[in-house]
Image (cartoon, rainbow over all chains, first blue to last red; front, side, top):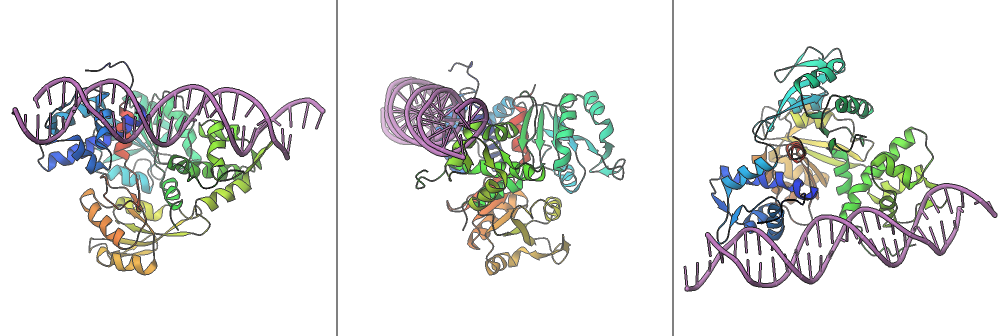
Length: 208
Length: 208
DNA sequence: TAGATTGTTAATCGATTAACAATC
DNA sequence: TAGATTGTTAATCGATTAACAATC
């Protein structure tokens, strides 16, 4: 019972995948119901925050008992648009691209790497995790043709902006960027950053 | 000119590495001075935020001209405790561990992978990026002996908490966790998460 | 029913932005 | 000097927490 007109804050949306992940573990463990305070304890958050976060999207719990794990899990998958599997384009077939192509954690969580690109002619045509590496020369048209909306960027920093421009032109709406550089992209294109150095430096501040 | 007693908010500390990264690029490009608004434009932030953030740590700019790039870069390296190189332990020598061990982006930014561990006897003794893979059986003692304070976790989710407990016992104060699981650690141990799935799911919310 | 826990409101806390005097 | 830009203050905005009526 709540006005659904107000868009949920982005910080809240960012936490939903963590809730979903915890619910996946609870499902594995055979837990059928969980309270906001138990879930909070597992995630290192407050119970009030979890209830508040979820209340942006609907009423999923039951007074007295808590949340049905399977039900809330399904609802979160709906909310996050994870009911169908998203095809993903991977750009960059270096060591990191190799690790990502072989990573088993995407499928089952809503994503499948469908296309791999690299600019190195030595790598084009080779196999990577069951996929043939294509040239970045054909990237734009292939992504357009398959209507792929999500890309993972695993290229060197110097190439990242150029590739980004092409991805945007190809219609990609979400980029997971492993290159250590801030990308320029239109406001309607979402970019998330995965930079180990930035995180290590952040933590180094507190050491010593 | 500012009371230095108030600790800087963690969100501010988290942005310092991004400022440092931008200053590194500016140095490469030969830029000697930059204003808060130019820096903000490059990072997609506001000029006021950058000035406010930096003001937590001191007065680094000059009215009329802006910030001396080399000077501010050095100051940020000081603030983030990056003047010496931090030795890092890498746990997990799978595909991801392999990519991390070969990644050239750590050295020069304050970090050097010094020890690699894996639980698989097949991998123990093998070479990974110039380092010999040790058994996780000797992890605690080796990390203690070398007084390593930072670890990168690149093991499967099921093993991550066990390894974390050992790392904490060994005296590690910062963990960069690639396993898709929320870790339990004492409050004085810093943990940062690198989960591509969480970021992809976050962005999927806005697609469609 | 009694106990537990939700969803929501209001209070608190914290971060960002706007504005401008100081000054290079 | 005139123009530009900082560092800081106060105002605004937004997120988190505390508290509790509703209710399973």
